[in-house]
Length: 588
Image (cartoon, rainbow, N blue to C red; front, side, top):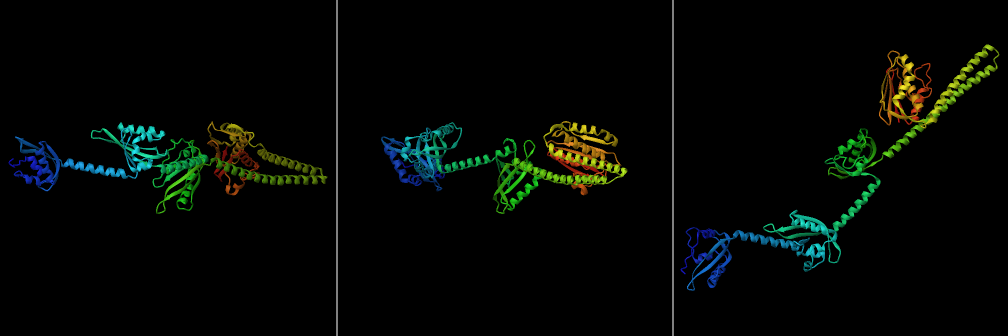
């Protein structure tokens, strides 16, 4: 061999030398970090006559560290090596990538072995290929013992189908990973609740290689969850038994979340009632109750009260209003003391409120009846005593009177007093009848027909007074009422309109009815009116008159009020002197 060395252009680029560089053996070996191993490789090629290849690190002429793959082949002539030839390949990028992969693998297995949760590599059939110490401790097996099972054999029978299905989805590329709560059997035979997180590792050509599984012990959290579920179920049963609805209010966003019982209390199916914000909830509250509701909320927000509690009417699905009791408590406050989150309940108290209202109404009726009874007793005592006194006096005078003319005059006076006594007894008898009849004679009556009957009865008086009557009553308006009472009420009210008409203008009477249960009946005239400031407190009193009419008895309005209230209705009056009067009746 001559010792001459030849490098082509590619080799000079790898070594980063100039095109006119002339290498020799020493200069060539000087590039290698392990020059001795390179020289040995060359010697082995000469000795064996075979191709030798190996990877080396070199420092280029520009001091850059590279990985190269060297292939050397000796050429022989007459059994003597007369030259060496070969190739040089820059494999720096491949070696660096391999180094990175090896480092990653090293770190992975370090993390794998020392992970605080169980980790395993599983074959595509679920066989345990590698497990870490945490998993061994969790399930009580030594690492070699895992080779006796696959994951399916350790899974609880009730969870097995879920595990198999999840693994099949990974293999079919229907999912990239899954999380599954299941029970794995411990070596001692007990089951352990775990969270299995599993993914599939694929090769360069997307071929399935193996599974990576993370197995976390969730026995304690599962136990707490079960306790919470039992408590939630118990609370839910309590709420169900009490029939209350629940709600949660985020004051920051105004969002409101209510349970299905809240919807049912208002007559809706859960999907029908769309109340996502408190402002929507407020719109269901009766307009007359909203201000009071807001005041109670403000008292709670200002910590004047510990709890918010309001009784109000809310609109039911059938458009009627029902009484509800709404309670709540702020459970989260801001650093500045502003309410942030509120929990509460709502309950249907309509029956209770209705019962209280009925009781209060009964108390009012009893009080009014007691008052009327007292007035009645006074009237009876005063009027009958007056009549009796007059008759007794006349009889005594007659007994001592001998003049026939005087005697006849006294007899005429006695007759007048007896007539007055009979009239008083008749009035008192009418008042007593109101209390006796009660609701036992109630019938379904068409209000418009009854009004026309009354107007027919008063037709002559209406004709003489030239009254103009306007009737705004639906022909289908029916009420359940005592016929005699309704006739008496209409006769008294309409005859009073005629009797107390204004002398300087044509009489106009409006009869209007609206609504059901109660039906509201209004009788309005443009007559002389009543001074309610002076007479309002005695308007419906017995024998109370206000205009000095000679034919006024003071019994009509007394009977009207008693008859209306006997049927659990109500009557009130509005009047202005010189302008007219309106009587408003609520007929149940």
